[in-house]
Length: 197
Image (cartoon, rainbow, N blue to C red; front, side, top):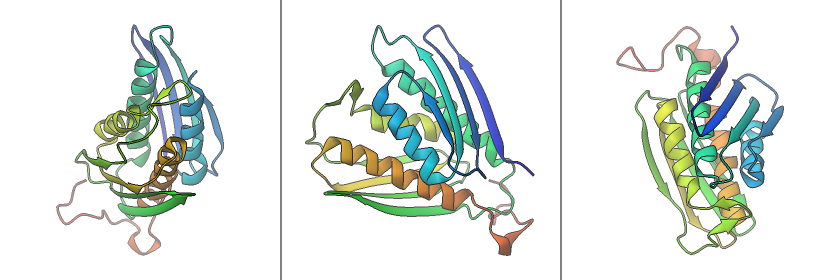
């Protein structure tokens, strides 16, 4: 059974298409108009082994906020759609990723209950190209709200803003991959004592 999500989100500010295959090989086709964000979404697909297509047209003449936010919302909705009934998955996933001087620790529970804990160094450059580094938390908030997952992201140290953000996306990709993979010992079983996720 394929686990594919496809979401189109159109507002007065943006037009977004996201397609994700949880059982892919890491093929990506990303175009949001924000170069660094494209790079981060590419990391998500490649390291999560998700086939990921993202096409966004937004009001970049204002700034990148709406484009980044609406893309994250659509991505979360597509991920949730692709998960389906969640029967037979591992449910929990975690990964720690270093990137030179930076380290990110990510833990996820595909619980059906949106919750975010996010910490990162406060002293880093405010911009990476056209990407406002304060958007990283907002991306995670938006994704969590639509994917309905509990997500803990912690960067205990790092100096370079590019590294700090990138290691978060790489660790997120792996944690999502591990949590969403099918558990061969739990075929047909929903990983919840409540009987619902």
